[in-house]
Every structure is written in structure tokens, then in C-alpha cells.
Image 1: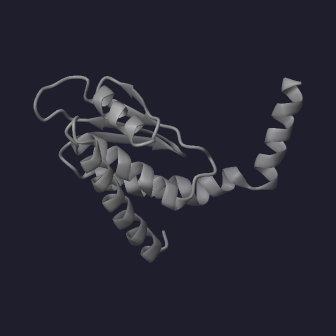
Image 2 (image 1 turned 45 degrees about the horizontal axis):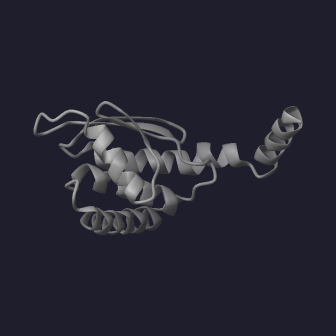
Length: 142
């Protein structure tokens, strides 16, 4: 049974050209969005391959586990990410659109900037940043 499911999955990936779309469109878009984050003092490093990414945060006040705090805020905002120390790891679905990826990056950025008790402020910042990124990337047709 599991082999049949795996074969069907591979067939669908090929038929809908999902891997090609990730390589040609959504992967580069995510990389560009993350590059915008890398310019911020709070972000130490960004690494990505396709739609997998790691965002290493720089704790400006010497507090540790910034990644865990950001992960918790992301979860409250509806985004599931993994945290290890000060690093957030993303692995969105292969079928994400550019708008989805811009929203994901906006939520991550909001979680890194938001005070722990101000989730509504984080939601506002995420929506604002996601909208700005989406309009920027749609306009430039990357």
C-alpha cells in the first residue's frame, strides 16, 4: 500500500511539474524574500535550498532561545516552524504560491520583532510586511 501511495505521489509531482515550479519560481522567490530579512540587524544568517530554509536570529539583548519564542508566536499566528536554539527552520509545502511564501516570511519577521505579549501587534506587522513584499515581487515579476 505505501509503495502505491509513493508511486502515485511521484506521478502527481511529475504531471503537475511541481518540482520544476519550485526550482524555477517559488524557490527563488523564497530566497529573495529571505534575502530581504538578511539585511536586518536581528537576522544573523539565512540559508535555503528550494523551499527549505533556516533563519538564524541574532539576539540583540543577549537572551537565548529566541528561536523558541519566535516559534511560539508563529504558531499563534497560524504558521508552524521548527526552532533549534536561535534558528528557525521552514519547510513549506511544495505547492505554496508566491503570496503564501511572502506571508510566511512576513509572519516569521513579525515573530522576531514582536514582544511576546503582543501577538495582535505581530499579526499587524506580518500582514503589513507580507503585503509589501507581495506587491514588490509581483511588480518586479521575479
